Image (cartoon, rainbow, N blue to C red; front, side, top):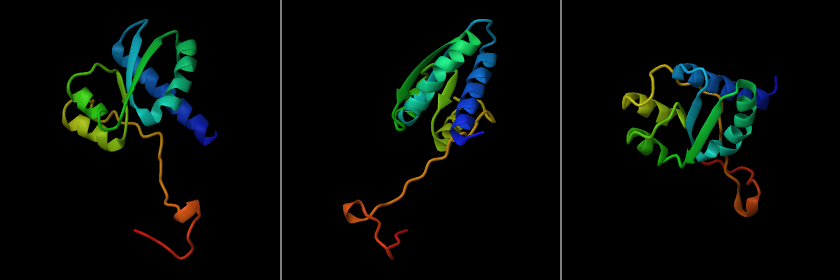
Length: 124
């Protein structure tokens, strides 16, 4: 299974778990995600809706605004954000402990002047 297919499968599974948590035969699932996840989540939603017959309402917020809104009581069945934010929301009693699922890892790297790597230069 390719990495991207694994991510799609994981998100669909997490949506299914959110559906089970609602305990409804036909449910609307409310998702709040960080803006970094917009493209991926929006790609998975139609597949999930088609296969399950359920509807997903997703909204996306910046990483700094999302935890604040959730702490203020924004309704959500599923929250997709950084592990640190999820852990903070667990401590705040806004996310169920032990429910965190990690499915994406992202990294960043530095380029040199003019967009070219600079040989021999390493920065910590």
